[in-house]
Amino acid sequence: MSTPAPFPADTARTAGASDLRFDAHNFEAHCYATTGCKVLYNDHYHVRDADDATRPPAGADHRKRWSGASYIGVKNFPAPAVVTWRSKDGEAHRAEVDIGGIFAEQKILFQVPPGDIPENAYIADPDIFLEVDDRTINVFMKAHIPLKAPRVPGNRFTNFAEDFVLAFTRTY
Image (tube, rainbow, N blue to C red; front, side, top):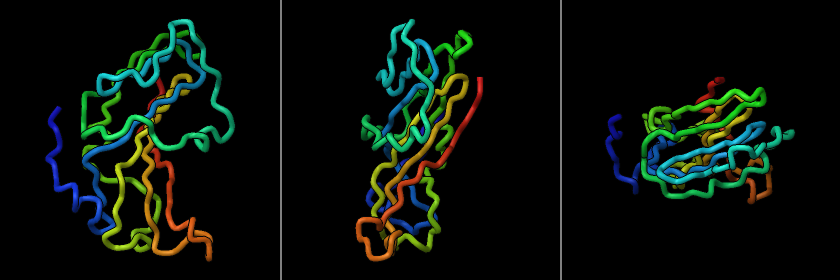
């Protein structure tokens, strides 16, 4: 896999809101309804359950409990994440999730109209979350996007958006 061409980090995340880019990211992995789940990314285990360890199913609104990704400052892009686990039915799975391929354009994904983002706003490294849920792997991006106006009028602490944007899903 070829590495995307770098771009000047000091301007890439302050460009026009329709073309916000990133050259590094943060990463976190979560497993639900699995046995023996392991997620290896950038030569680091983010989940490393014992082969007989069982994870419970995801609860309602489980992503609301995800804060920022804990593995920070990953330069774009290391080798694919290697995920191994057994689904609820006991079937063994192995997947290589190509984070670099998913985000090949290095564009920050967000759900805010570009006109709501101030020109020259600085966007920090986005968070990438890999979720294993029984037989499905999902990859989300979450970025802290400054807004021109608060989401709740008069509340200056709501002048940003942090939405999970689904970038990849596959059921095995």
